[in-house]
Length: 334
Image (tube, rainbow, N blue to C red):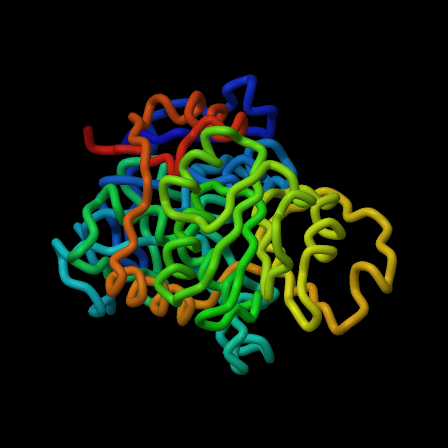
C-alpha cells in the first residue's frame, strides 16, 4: 500500500514525510482492517513529526482521524461486518485493568497506545485497529464530514465537559481551528454565548460567519467575563490572560496535548475566587460515542478543505502556518 512515513523527527518546513510502498497490514485477533477513504489532519500530527512528543523509536505513519470501510476481519472479531463504515481515533488501546481504566478514566491509562504514534495511522491506504476501539460512523455524515469529529470533535467535547460549561452560560474560545469550530456548534446547540479570541484573520472571519457572539484578536478586548473558557492554542502565556477574563468560580480547560511554558501568575488576580484550571488528556471511548451522538443530532457540519495523500507535507505546513480554514481532510482514495 501507499503510505506517508516519518522516519525521524524534523521541522515541517523540511517536508519530512516520505511517500513509500509498504506492506498491507493484516488484522490480528480481535482486530479489523479498514480500507481508508479519508483522514483528517491535526496539530497533534505536527507535535509528533516535529518531536514535541517523544519519538517512539520506529518509523511512524501519522494520522488519527480515520474513516473507511471494514474489508477484513481478524480471528474472533465480530463487532463490525465487512463493508461497514467505521472510524479510528487517537486512543487505540488501554490495559483495561489499572485503577484508571476500571474507574472510567481510561484516557489516563499509563499503558495507553495511540493511533499514528505508537501504531500506524491514517496517512495510508489501509490500517488495522482493535474492534473495541473503533467507532461506527452515523449515516448523516459523509466521508468528508466525519474525520474532524474523531479527534477535533472528541477532544473539543471532552474540553467542554472539563470546562464545566452548562446550557445557557457563556464560553470563551482561545484559538479557532478544527476543534474550536466544532465546539462552537455544540455550545450554540446548548444555548450558550460564545466569545472567540484568535490571531488569524481568516479564523476570525470563519467564527463570525458561524455566528459567534463576539470575535476579536486580543484577550483584553473581550467585552465580558465568561463562565467557562477553553484554550486550544498551544501557548502557555494565554493561561493567565484567560484566567483574568473568567468569572468567579469559572473553569479554564487546556485542550492541547502540548503547550509552551505557563508564566508566573498572581494568585489573587488569576486563581483566587475559586477559579479552576483543568487540563485535558486524550479521551475515553465514552466521550467519543457521546460526541458522535450529539454531532448527529445537531447535526454538526465541519468546515473542511480537502487535499490529496501525496500532498500531506504541504498541507501540514499550511496547518502550522494557520492557513487552513476549519479542518484539513486527506482524500486517500482519489
